[in-house]
Image 1 (cartoon, helix red, strand yellow):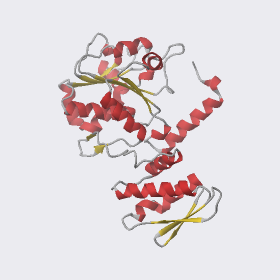
Image 2 (image 1 turned 135 degrees about the vertical axis):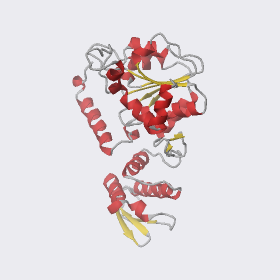
Image 3 (image 1 turned 90 degrees about the vertical axis):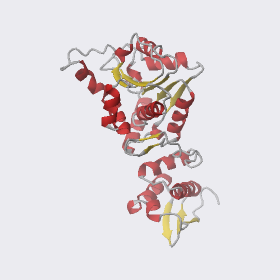
Image 4 (image 1 turned 60 degrees about the horizontal axis):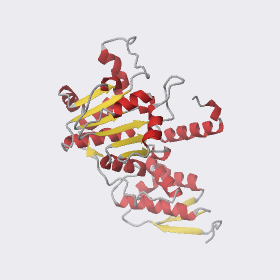
Length: 327
């Protein structure tokens, strides 16, 4: 059968596959495959008939989805989109065992697992390396996975403390003009870290550990002058650190500690003329043993499908108009 063949290809749906799950609500999954591949899909009894040019691609996607259902996973639009993206690259969701690696369980018993190949590689790097940089666009789970790994290490007594840091406001961290005491001033900037902690540990448990100082959620400026042993240390939004702040942060690391730095180099909020410490760290530390750089991409976005489209639209726009990117 040639690439341009209009012959039909038949795929049998075995009895161990839930057809409602496979097809999606109002055939949403089948419609998505048709839209992405250009292949028409018809149901005939216990079979699906495919007609179009990219028959092998559409068949591979459907077989992959059926395999996912056979091992007990559910399908949603996000996962179907991800399987399609992988198949277009000649990759397999199933063969990479993406969802079989449980990081930890939330306070409600929900397992936290990597959802994409990029996230799985990120998790493996954190397990193997002492310092890991997780770089990628919004919605790829950089911070949430890092916090889950920190909680897992704490529960397993691999570390004695979890420290979560974030640059507040801008490079100078000028907080004086904001209302309230110091904690009230910085809390809005640390909220994403609190949200991840509350989701994984439960609010009461997280606050109890914070009161005991087993968990610290602090602005980056609080890290100066400290040496942190036996700690899991996360620096979030690291693209908004200066080179001086990044060096200061990385040199806080003590014995028995692990460091994860997360950031999105496409969303730098530093004043014009200030260089991002995250970008410099890529250049300076790229060849250092036991430091790993993990790059998550738009295909790893696990938020609403529109987030991925927004990221792609901005990337394409700035490739066409590089002069509009601020230095």
